[in-house]
Length: 183
Length: 183
DNA sequence: ACAAGCATGTAACGTGTTACATGATTTT
DNA sequence: AAAATCATGTAACACGTTACATGCTTGT
Image 1 (cartoon, chains in turn orange, purple, green, red):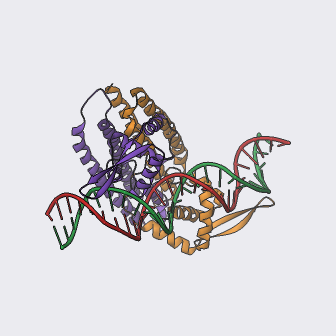
Image 2 (cartoon, helix red, strand yellow):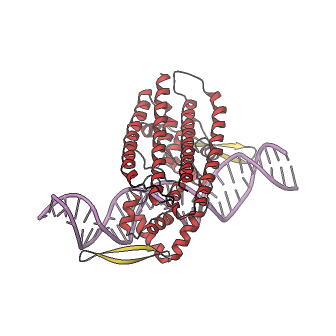
Image 3 (cartoon, protein in one colour):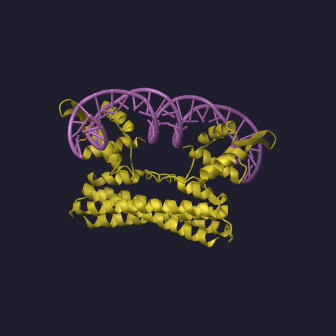
């Protein structure tokens, strides 16, 4: 489905970037719904360049260090917009190792089961705290306007990530309560 | 990480099964947190057999059709329990193509953006209805007892799946409302 | 007789992760 | 001077999907 392709096109369409920049964005801003290592990004940039969807110019950092600043081409933009306009069928539910483990946990002693849920709970609480912190700093950038801005999109997906985490937390708490009842 | 390995071991540990059976379970009961095609299952069963974690006996279906009924070995069970007892660090957030698209959607006309959200919403509503239907039929199997039963685990993860979908739906509705406001 | 479902496998391809590999620049 | 970060790449492997391929059994 070439999703990484469109993630990269989408980012470069917003602003010219190097592979290193992309790598940072994937592991910060997009990490709540897409991510990629540099080892995947660099080959994909090469491929997209060969396909004529992006181009780069070499920019010097200091004296010797050459970096490639990529920007999107007209064909690239058309390809991106066509993808954006397409309505997809629902994706399969994402895989979740913790839920899989939970599904089989009956074989374990009740205390071990509770330990699993408590550990997962504290990790998720920490995560949602970070997300809400990001939200509070990011919300300042949101200027109300009649047009839908990149900042507005950032805000919407971040909000979704927070809601998702909070629901996971509620589920964990309910599980802990129900396991407590049955022992 | 060999997660498929443990998913298979977990299922075979509950009950002896053929590859075909596993395939059905993955695409029904487990579909809300793990799944696999038969093309992945059969090679994995071969591998697990070679590793001595499972064994099979051949059972005849009718006159000629041979099926392999797999069961777990002692080593397999030890391996499974060791995996179940391990507490893992939080997984990276699952990838989500719809959120990725939403993130870049600003380039599209407002109506197209709304169409995307409305389509996603109706698909998710349908999905949650199916899940709640499963829940209502499955809840009958839940007998209250002091021990944690497989049925209880089924119930917990299904409940989690419903909560997850409902939150996605809430998010979509909020997005639609907020997009409506800014136009 | 036919269709649907049971049952098992392989091949090619696409995607993703971890590790290997190198070197420059900036900050402390 | 050292450490952190910037910057770009490749190789090996693991995992997952789609398509190919075959044949039996059961229900209509």
